[in-house]
Amino acid sequence: MLFRNKSKERNNGASVRLASYTVLGVVATVFSSSVFPPVFTSQTSRALINAPIIPLTTPISGVVKLSDDKGKATIENDKVDKTTLIGLKVQLAALDNEMRQKNSIVGDYASRIEDLNKDLSSQQAALLIRTQSDLAAAEAALQMVTYSTRIAKAEATRKQKLVAKGVYFGIGDDIADTIQLEDVKLQAARVAVDKLNKEMSFARQGIYIGSDLQSLQNLQQEIRTRSADLMQIQMQMTTLETRRSELETLASAEAARIERLTRADLAIPAGTTLYKPVAATGREVVAGDTLAEALDCRNAFVVAIFSERQAQALSVGSRVKVNADGWNQEADGLVERLVPRTTERVDLDYAVPFPPTERRELYAFIRVDGANQQKLARDTACSVGTWVSVSLPNEWLGKTQDYVHEASSSLLNLAHTSVDELPGVTEATWSLIETSRDKVFDYMG
Image (cartoon, rainbow, N blue to C red):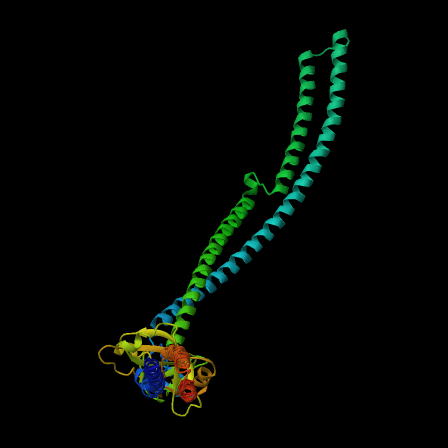
């Protein structure tokens, strides 16, 4: 009995100590949860809002004649070299003058050829009338020769018969020659008719043969010569037209080039916001000079500096929280790029220079989500240069919650089992543990 009472006292003491340790563990957890999160939280206040710069540059040299607060400007240059354009216009004027002369020559040649053709036509008509008259006379002569030949040959034939009978005394050869002569007369008359028919046909075709038609031949030759000259001049005019078309194309291109160099109307791109004002009126500029700068607020972003230790939890696509003074609530952000360093040349592409980094630090480019990004686009100058704070998600918080939940449940079970014989201690321990655990979870959210 004595040893049994001592053992029971030892068990009760162990149970009380175990319950006390449980309470102390929960209290320590509450204390650590209230102290260490600020230490281990990955957060930086070295972050600001930035946006890419779109420069408005002048393509020509000259003087700013007009500028306004909406990002519009007009550049004029009255010192553009126009020598080439003047030379092209001089060549065009010379070609026009030459073409006018050619046109007048063409008109004269065409009029002369028309007159010659009319003269030839009238002479051809007269020739046809004369030839037709000669042909009619030749045909009449042919008929007369035909009749006379027929009579003469009949008479000669009768004489030949009388001579053969001895009734008529004459020479037979003379009678035969008379018959042959009559045949020749008939043939000559027929040849004359045929000749005139051919001359009539040639005259209708415009073919003139014979010394008596030399004037018509000369007239035809002059018409052919004039027509050849006219064709040559027309070919020259075609060449001049082609050359003129080429010169007009070159002159138009040169005039357009001079116009581009003489005046330029500029404006910042649609959808952007004027950041730095346009150059003042009257300022002389050179091609390539920046007249103004605009911001593309749709691409505004947050650039934040993190240490390499903090950046171990970062990667492209990581979610972060962004907050700034004056914001109603913090905004969600998405990491788009991680850059170890930048240069002064890169800084020129953005509205404000990047904050300087120290050793073992890098930049994180963060895109703000949703309505906050739209708000940046609507704000004046995209709120560039505004300092913000960026914090990484507390992944350890969820793990701590799970750990506290598991540990406190195990301790509760163990304490409940160990102090069954001490109802008062069990009830007090249980109540304290429940209260402490609720406080821990309330703090952790």
